[in-house]
Image (cartoon, rainbow, N blue to C red; front, side):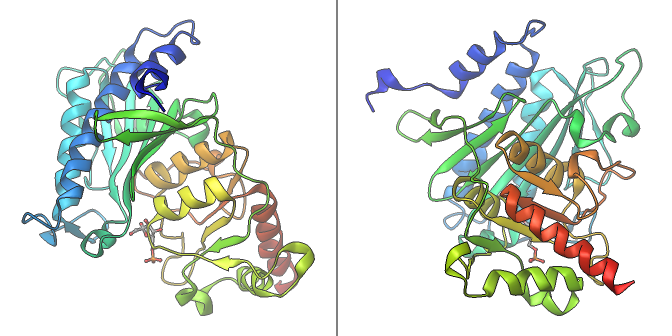
Length: 338
Ligand code: P6P
């Protein structure tokens, strides 16, 4: 496509801003910061094998997980960029136990929840990784922000998105007016609109789950996984099993092609493994905006009450017909088991 036909992320955001009557440009400035940070992290991810930024940082995060060096670099880059936007009062990050209150921005209305580098266990083996972000507004800005300001239901998100550092680098986001994808054109260092108005197919032929935990899954989930493997031409089964171990990569493939991603509760992870505020909620907002579904197994992810900044939740997310059947089988089995 000739460059004259390109729509850059910057231009797209300005055009979208005109759709919001009370838009003052704050959200646009936040996106500009996210875009800059994404380009810096992309540069570091792309050269990870060449300089000493692979491997563990020697510290652990709030969940006791080893922090990879790139985790820490990505966290620092995004927090610095968002702080400089002047629009963000507080940031919650997978890499920080406590909220990061931005000095001089106590009266700003935006809150950011971020997983600066999700899938980091894949860094050393060159598999796709990514950044997930979620944006909320504070209900009141008359006093300094608190941790409670951050504990909002996912349905109150103002925007959500992710950057996937894969075979190409893409930024996918929603502000509640559908989902759009932008691919980084390295030659001009611009994110350009490549996937307008993404809609997830209602049915797919892929299921994504860590089957190593099969013995630990609820019976209904085992029943659904077995269902995915049955030969049935009419319903395009058996489905393909695809699991990269990087939420963003598995989610992105299913968003474009159709499919379901599952991280159930198990004995080892009684509330599931994925974190509500900066993994489940942003992905749930995106998938619903694309016509899909995201459930905890007991209800909509976006309705789940947040009682802890780093709380986890079981998640079944993707093509609506697949998620619906999966959750029905989970609950039918639970009923018959009682
Ligand atoms: P498991 C990566 O650590 C992550 O948070 C997600 O990106 C990914 O989907 C999941 O954990 C993989 O977890 O237990 O299957 O290795």
